[in-house]
Length: 171
Image (cartoon, rainbow, N blue to C red; front, side):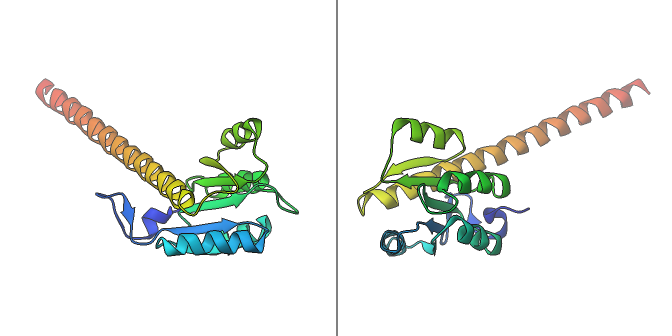
């Protein structure tokens, strides 16, 4: 399965995509719409979902760069959705958000694979900063992984060339 960055055209030299795709999941219509509006004003393409089930349906139809998800929702909660997305979309950063945060909850969320943890209420300026920080970190990790794969490939080619040269001198 290709990642969003393999499917979409990104400028790897600047670590920025033309328009990052965000999924905002919150059962509270006002909160979800407010988050979507704040992030759209910052230039992001944003889709909203009101439940974990709706989010999974949306994720199966489109490729997203990052997901912002409330933890406490009716039905499957954000931690369950986090585990589902880790299985199906392991490269997508997931930021969990809640009005009922605690250190233990944050620790558990990060242990389950959340890329960040934010408590509500958060300011209009804080949310875009959190999104950008996570997108930048994820882009850096992808770029580093790619560079490591290239270095390993080049190293393997050098070893094979040296072995072939040694075999040719024996003959």
